[in-house]
Amino acid sequence: MSNIVAWTLFALGVFHIPFGIIKFKTAFAEAVSAGFVDQFRAHEVRRTALWFTILGPLLMLAGHAAIHAVAVGDLALLKIVGIYVLITSIICVIAVPKSGFWATLLVSPLLIAAGYGLLP
Image (cartoon, rainbow, N blue to C red; front, side):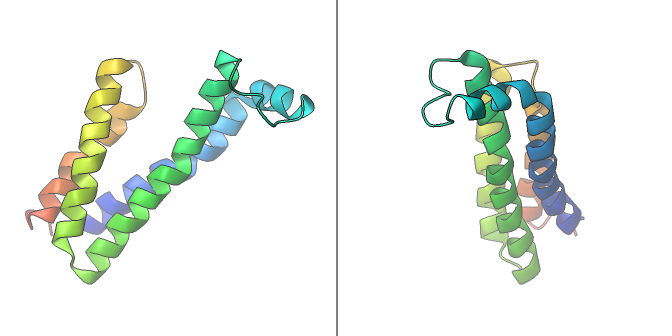
């Protein structure tokens, strides 16, 4: 079960990237056609597109750390990843209730439980 939870976090990151590129294809196309460099600061939709999409690799990184922790039995690392994801998720759900952070809010307590050895 711990392995499934860790891979779920990684999968959320993997799916974030193509979803962001597809959802914000116009914003990215406009930024690229304008030269890409410094084309996200002044345009709210472009900023949203960049932050949404760049969250994918960060979720993948957290997922990889969790997968590694499960593989080597490092419960402390698993707990730490879960706590970081939980705190980030709580802040983001409060700040933007209509967001996908509800998914990480569900996954993070499972990571923490696994870190305490409560999940197989």
